[in-house]
Image 1 (tube, rainbow, N blue to C red):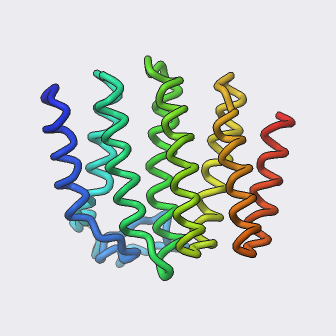
Image 2 (image 1 turned 60 degrees about the horizontal axis):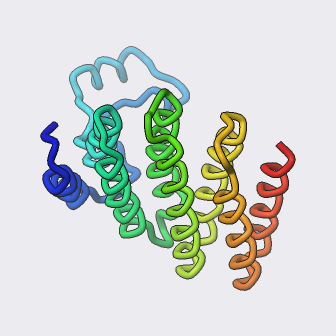
Amino acid sequence: MSLDLVQIVSEIQENLAQYTFTQEQEGYLDISLINRVNESTLQEAKHKLPPSDPLVNTLALILATMQGGPFDFTRLSINEFLKSYLCQINEENQEACTQKYLNCVYEIYLTMLKGYPFQELLWEYLSQCFNTISKYLIEQRLAEGCQVFLNKVATMGKSAAGQGLHTSSIQHFLHNLEVRAREEDFVELADSARNHRFNLETF
């Protein structure tokens, strides 16, 4: 990878511009998504390739930036990734879309735990992004997607506490989410945020 910030961000933007969230598998057999396979199904799927996925390609680029640094390469790459999420999510796809993007963010988080030299900087950055994203989701009244988002972030927060990382920003995120959700009458979402914050504080 060329060590040029503008080139890296440009490549990520080009990848993400090609991405349109879809739940369709386009004929590729993923055995984790079905209950049973048979010989006929396996033979039919034998030579089918998975569809090109610009989102996964982008994730690979982000993970690559974490190998060489500097931090801004990773920070701005993640920024583009999260902006793509906010552009893709809508009322119809909010839960599945959030799950797919946040699974990628979770991979970034897990990679961060494996000796990433700017771990504290990245964790603080992610925490700030989580706060902004949750505000957008509530403003757009995407409560179901926000619940998926909350659950995944809370999982990372709990793990971070166990790793000795600071959790003040995540607690701030959870508090703000609870307040905003109550203001918009998303009672279950607010209660969930409160419970996650209590569990984090009592780790």
